[in-house]
Length: 402
Image 1 (cartoon, rainbow, N blue to C red):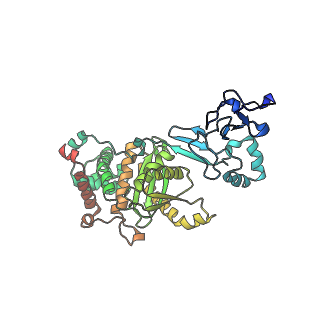
Image 2 (image 1 turned 180 degrees about the vertical axis):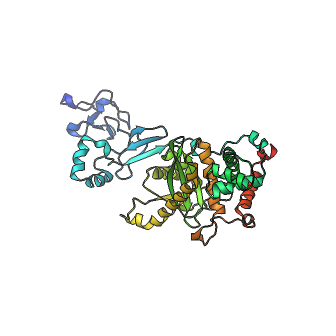
Image 3 (image 1 turned 90 degrees about the vertical axis):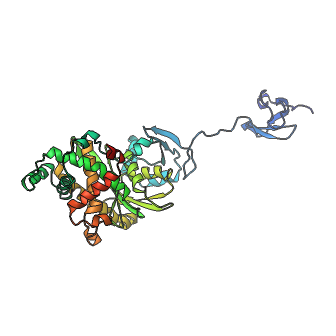
């Protein structure tokens, strides 16, 4: 077979070109697409091949709306943010059409203030950041120096937690009424002692979670700085299913809260989480849905007025968590801030124990969210606190040995 006769030197195939089908050298190859000079045809086998290798995208993620490859936009400590750069993407066009004339002019000079393109967040959070609020640290030496009876500690919890008295008023009440010499610092120490047992008691007797849970975060003061408490409440029996104390109100605070809230869910159960517009919640739900068998669905309630159907439908659940926040603030107001993170965690744990197991709710016909038979046998709050501490002590075999 004679080689290809090339009249114009510009149309000559590069000498390193080889047919990918039969291996014919460049003398038997010619361009098959005219002036483009990108497609090669073999005279021997009539096979077609490209002069340049086809570009293959190295992107890990693609836009679900337009199929465009996402590029790495930002790198954060626990998250990589990918962004779609396609100006013809339906998401971009829909967001761009919502801008008014003034916003379109401002976008030319301050484009960073407008997030119009589709974004995807890839989280890589270590397991140690996914734990629920840390247990108050109480050394074994404290138990050896504990010279008060269980009845006295139950009295402290009754006045300081259930009746929301300050530590100083609680100590004064015990001295003047019950003739028990006690300082306000001892009241705080006993609360940390009790919280170490109540934390495991709350987790053991929490029960199953409902299909609808409402969550929100509220702030407290620790050493004069804002610290955030995440609370999730069940819609059916109004029990607190999750609590977490976090220095931030971002994803690192929302993920452990949601993870604990759905810990007792049934296999394959679809749970609807109703929150406000904090962007930490949809990001946390997106992260957890990749790691759990259950499915979390997010519903947002924005503002104080029902401006959309979703807010109108789920507004009662948002009001439920707001009432819980007010109740929580009432019980910690006497503390007037905390001097340590451990003190805030201890009082939060004790509040959840009081709210779920000891407090009568008018909306539940004066019943408790979680009713336990061994607690209902006792008529006084003091005796119920003592019984909770006994059950919690049984869950601590290391402390029993000490």
